[in-house]
Image 1 (tube, rainbow, N blue to C red):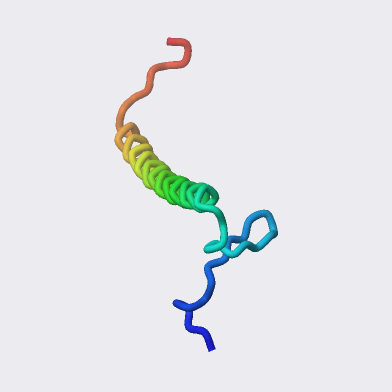
Image 2 (cartoon, rainbow, N blue to C red):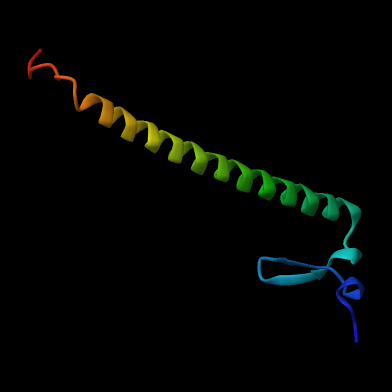
Length: 76
């Protein structure tokens, strides 16, 4: 019985599986680069979500504050 630490790491790419340890170093570097890029994309997607929520909150506050202010007449 193998423990998770003893299992061979596997790269699954475009429907095919590869023994990660058996890949050339150049390929391993590309895999690491893609992992870093994926992590950065997730981080920036989360940042965009936070910014969108903050913007929505500010829009609601702006709408609330403008309720008591008379807008310009049409055509002005």
